[in-house]
Structures are given as structure tokens and as C-alpha cells.
Length: 270
Image (cartoon, rainbow, N blue to C red; front, side, top):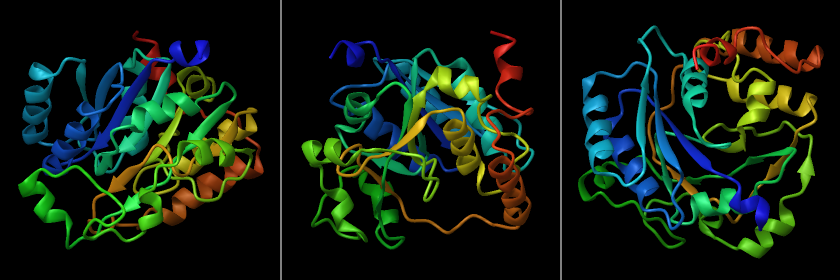
């Protein structure tokens, strides 16, 4: 219990020109039973619509809402995440994508399950593309087992005791997804954050996990807790995937624990 009380969660939400989805995600973040110490929107170069939305929430929220923007020079998710983590005040980072609706107990579950020397890989509920647009109109942020448009219903079940029993330590790298992941900020800094050599969609989260595992940080898969629902949308272009796969393979083959092009450049200014 003492360790849990010492954990301050910074919730980092990545986004790019999707203000309707981000609106719902921030709503769900502010509706938490146990709120994060701050919400940081990691913006990969969105237009002013996103800035105005974040400012509206910043002015009204009872917790800090921070907007970290970078110039739009293409898909640079790794850099966007690093900039946000660099300014985070919490000692524990909960990282989600800007299209993930959060269960009311989401932050509480991540804090409850956080253990030194590990990072958490959460699951996601999938919402159909057909059901998503009406959410933007109704502002409905809830999801449950019998809800319309749910494509993998078992992931809506919250069973905290079973979740804790199943969250075993592993070094597996299969199925890493940065849309619902959490880790201690110091562990992230130790491996130099996300590798900004990744440009374009894909594999930056897996390569980050490789370096965490190589540095002695175990993965724990969390099911039936820390629930989040992924809004349906078209897939991102994947023309950079082959190049990104090569960077990932280099980290695995070289048993790398750090990267050269990472978060340290932003920490120097703190």
C-alpha cells in the first residue's frame, strides 16, 4: 500500500489531427475514480483545432492539462512521446493513444498493479468503425459487455483479483502495443526513451520494450483490469514498416539497452 501511495501517474495521450476522438478520450480521463496527477497531450503537429480543445479542458479541469506540440514533419510518434514524458511531473507514466476511451477505474488499476522493475502491457476493447461516429455526437464514453459495436467482448470484463493473479513477469516481446502501456519514468529515461530514428507508423513501441527488457525490466500482461476501448478508424499508412522492422531487429540482435536518438535531448533543458 505504501508503494501505491507513492506512485504519481502522469497520463500521456498521443494525438494528431483527431480532435473529436481526443475530446472523448480526455472526457474519460477526467471521469476517473482516481485521477492522474496530470494529463499531457502529446501532439504530433496538429492544427489549431486540437490546441483550442486542450485549452478548453485546461481552463476547466481540476488537474493540470498540458499540451506538448511539435512541428508537423511527418509521423514522429517517438519524438512526440519523448517530449511529453520529458515534462511529466509524475514518477509513473501511463501511455495511451488518442483514440482510447478509458474505463472509470483505468488509472486506479494501473497504479494498483505497478511494481518496481516491471512495465505493464494492457489490452484493448475494439469498437467497430460503424459504431464510432455516433460517439462523437452523443459523447458516450462508456463501454460494456453487451454494448453495441464491441468486437471482442471478453476484454470489457473487469475482474481485479483474476487480473492480479494473471499478471506474471515475462520477457516476451509478442504483442507490444503502445496504446495502453505504463512504466516508471526513471526506467524510461534509463533506456533513453523512445527511439526517434523511427519515422512513420510501426514498431517504435516494440523496440522501446526490447530495451526495457534487455535492461532488466520485466513485462507484465494485464488482462481484466486497466480497461480501454479503441475507437474504430482506418489504419495508418505502413510504407515505413520495412525500415522500422530493421531498427527493431538491430535492437534485438544487439541486445541494446539504450538508443542514441532519444529523450535525453529534451531533459537537458529541464
